[in-house]
Image (tube, rainbow over all chains, first blue to last red; front, side, top):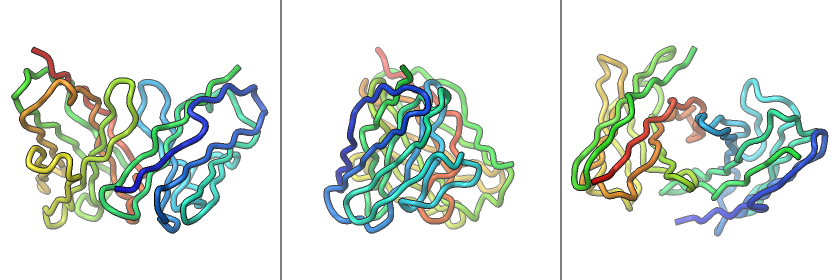
Length: 107
Length: 118
C-alpha cells in the first residue's frame, strides 16, 4: 500500500499570505496525485487533478506541482474562505490512499 | 448539473449491517465509476472501493474485503454500499463520489453518518 504523508499537519495563516502544502508518496506514483479541500460539515471538493491540472471552476490562486514522490499544493494570496483541511489522494495503485490532511486556519 | 444524493443517517448495533444509497443525476450513470470513501471522527479520508455501474463489477480495499458489497441499480441511477459485521470503529461519515474518468473524484455526495453503538 502506498502511504502518503503531508506537511505541515496544521498551518495558521493571515489573509493574502502564500500557503504551501507538501505531499510525499512512499513510492513513485507518476502524476496520479489529486488534491481536495474539505470544509467543516461539507463534502470534499476536487481542486487539482493529476498533480497540476486545475479542476473546472477552481480559483486560479490554487495550483499544484510535482511528480514521482513529491508534490506541492500552493495557495497564492490566501482568502478567508480557504480555511479548510486539504487532502492529497493517489490513484496510481490499489488501494487508493489519502494523505492525513493539512488543516489551514485563518489568523 | 451533476448531483449525488445519499440516504439518511443510520444508527446500528455492533454486528449488524448497513446499506447506504447514492442516487446520481445530471449525467450518464453507467459512464462513470462510483467510489466510496469514509471519514471517521477525528480521522482523515479512507478509500473503500469502487463500482463500475456499467457492468456492476466492483473493486474493494483489502481491509474491507469480505465485509463490504457495492452494487448498483442502473434503472434507478443508484449505487449502494453495504457494510456488514459492523464494529464501533466503523462509525464514520460515508461518501460516494463520481470518478471523472481517471480516478480523480470530481463530484461527491453529501455524506451519510453511520453510528455503530450498543
